[in-house]
Image (cartoon, rainbow, N blue to C red; front, side, top):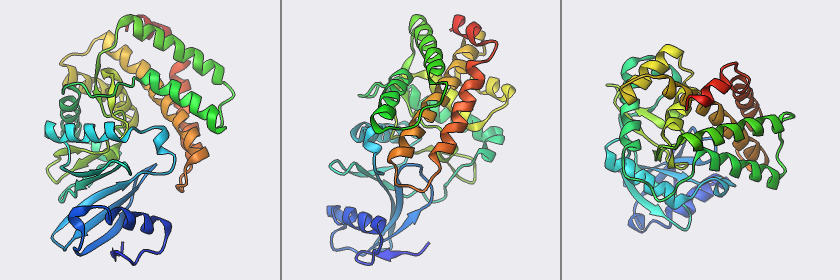
Length: 312
């Protein structure tokens, strides 16, 4: 993609990034170039070059993202990941705009689901997640139950679509919440957004975690369940990763993962219905949400559903 200099922007996005660049004191009077970075389902991403010496990654919050994202909390989590040794260097933060500035990680690329067919990538990713999950508590706690309840209210507020079996989905959600609260939550810092593109890889399969916008203290098993869900792991691979992460495989852990996978799909399906109503990005949120709803139903209708709830 073509580099542009400040003052050359022609579209809304380019004018927006130029306005942000003008607010970074350390870059005043320097040669600034920028170009878009592909990817992202709710924000616009930019690579910025200063004096041709060093490049940075700048993320501009998308329209409506304030409904989901507490930017100060995301910034805290980004710095925590850096401290854990599995995050990107955080260079700056513009709190009024909610814009974070990171060092551009040369030699790394966004992973794809195919990369996780390699055991080395899976093991390194699990180690990175565990390091972040095992760190000290974050300021923000937002469990998967909080997230779903918030999204359901937001769908109603923006007039978003709801599926015909919404009442059934909410009954299954309530059953899962009741069972988990009775069993007890293991609240730890979680990314809460473990899709493949948020794992950066180098040529040696080293992993760096990026994008902590949804980070908060949450149930530990949700972090792994969402990751398994996003990767589409086979059952034997899931068990391998459970043992890698927890050091054991047992019916309780497998049950917690299974229930949390259903809740992960319900959460992101509901999120998509909100985005369909408010986002300006060119992405088929309804198709994405419909797919997620279908996967949630597969587990909610599973013959082992009630058995999983008793084993939490």
